[in-house]
Length: 191
Image (tube, rainbow, N blue to C red; front, side, top):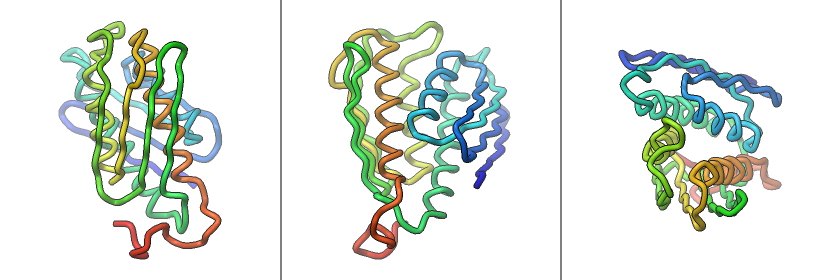
């Protein structure tokens, strides 16, 4: 099954599709973000087709945040279409000298705890403070509860990569089919 959203504002023009398979195409106009989203796709098991034109001459903020919004909206569609899933996912992920932890609850209650003190303010031209904005936009729009922690610092590229990979793998676990064929909530609903 394919899920697709096109979103256009005065700052960005975004087309994102999540499809079955393992082939991804990511073109955001921001090289480092392309790399992180390609890794996210691989480790989450979600094949992404992303094409974005954004006002990157201003900076990378609008493009990065808006991709988080659309990706979150698509994840919410996927969640609503699933009849049963594990709901919870946890991943500790080392990236060489760095270590990240991601905990995901497909709860219907959007909340992000983000504790990452990056070693540097930039990776190339990419502002590291935008990483939190990306995840906040995604989490709010997907209606997830997510805790992301950078437990060991090192190379800033590795720090961010560990967070993206940990989140992707925790999300994959949370979305995986449950042995019990029902909504994973004692309320009988996740909203």
